[in-house]
Image 1 (cartoon, rainbow, N blue to C red):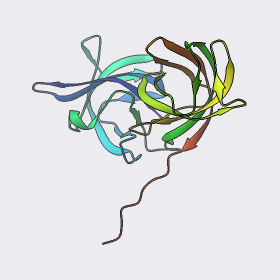
Image 2 (image 1 turned 120 degrees about the horizontal axis):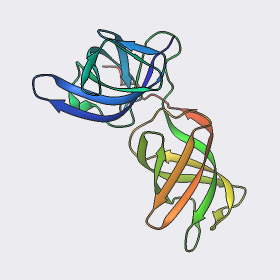
Image 3 (image 1 turned 90 degrees about the vertical axis):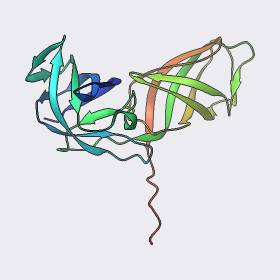
Length: 193
């Protein structure tokens, strides 16, 4: 069974090292398990080892799906961020994306939004600025309008699942919707030396 943990908090604990808090969304997790964490800026995942697990400040050996826990990892805290995913290497690796399409309803905007509009996107534990690259069927949507909108994350690729709920906001602008398609991240290969 593939393990998936969504990272919601990253801290450095004296005497322990890097600790991440998150929710096990699939599978189960045990101490000394080898996992992959990511996606990083290049869209790739890196290997980590879970050295200890705590639930409600008490050490435990096993965490199942739909349980939250704090995990001690052997990776520097400054490399991790909220919104990342921990997963087992068995089976299909999660596909990070920078571009995704969502069916949205614009709840409020004074004038309407169009291509190029920047907004903060919330999808589960992901929170990142994105901009709109396309709107169909019209080129502009106003309050209470429905449309299919293509978003592009500004900084890092993220692991987004089709069907996930989305909330976007900027100032008084607010909108909700569902992710309908995800375009896999295109890896940039390092030039040959």
